[in-house]
Length: 406
Ligand code: ADP
Image 1 (cartoon, rainbow, N blue to C red):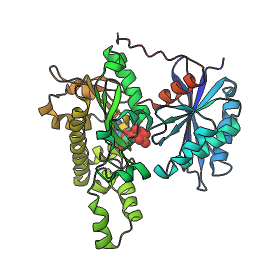
Image 2 (cartoon, rainbow, N blue to C red; image 1 turned 45 degrees about the horizontal axis):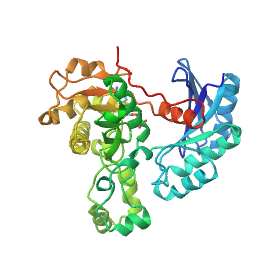
Image 3 (cartoon, protein in one colour; image 1 turned 45 degrees about the vertical axis):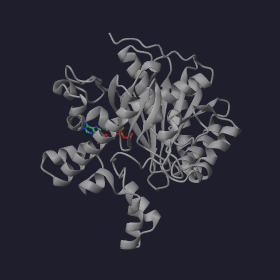
Image 4 (cartoon, protein in one colour; image 1 turned 135 degrees about the horizontal axis):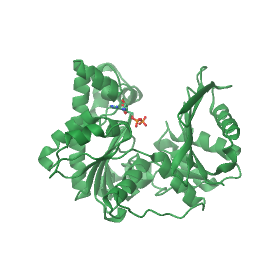
């Protein structure tokens, strides 16, 4: 039975994929080709807790796609795949939802390259290879930005001359849309309330991190902006800084805009503050052993997060739940506890035991009695992309009926 959707997330040096069983709504095989462009490029497949890796014949995306399709054939999965879904970071203002890929859609994704020069070109490479390798299957693009297209003007505009917006697309777009949509879907199920009636404040905390406000089931604000650099402290990204920094570093150090941008994207955030690592788990271990840089980085991370969450409460207007998701949001009881401590004046308090229990795949409520609800949800962007793909490819109908947790 053709009930599988292949989800592809193609980056500049990696190709990540998942074969999603749409009946069970879970992956049956996942894989990752890494170090594309380097001599030691390799691909890893994981199925039923078994993991195997192979070096790639060539260190490029085509070889990765070939290795992936060879493996799918060997596993007998190739015939089951009915459609392919692609993650695309930037869909500009054109894409307000996922889209079935045709020449016009490809041309529009191409037009968004200037908004995401690090991401969209790699996605296009992945899409073109997939169109070749899966030429008889419908293919869908799911955009990280699409969910935030409902943001009102007062949220998406920067206070800069309107020509910069009208002629050059300078506005806030927001990212992590598929993760927020999944969180919304799960919240509706857990709270037994229709998506359209939910007011949520969500934190997606992975290597990239952002928060978003959802009002009546729609995104009304988020912390990332024109690029994924704005907002929270992230693994290696600074989040908010004074734009005057660019000129300051040019005067002080002769730094170009490109050099400053690279520092803000790659050497800042948890890594820059700690001088140790961009990895939250490593920093928690180091902080527990007294590492001053690790403590400093984690403190700043939580403080900035709490301030942004408080701001998103204004946008949401009400709150059915505050949601933590993404690798840090799902696993770091310490980050959640410290963040909620900052938010005590707003009516939040944690149940410490429930908070400690929510790690490594466990999700659920973590607030104390009398607190506003706080919920941990495991991110599942692949499922969201697969559901859109199945729907646009005509494989399913949408059925997002809220059902209370038993
Ligand atoms: P990406 O944005 O690359 O998808 P993830 O969502 O996987 O990233 O999140 C990665 C982050 O989650 C890393 O900072 C990692 O240290 C953190 N993380 C994972 N497990 C834990 C844990 N048990 N405790 C604290 N942080 C964790």
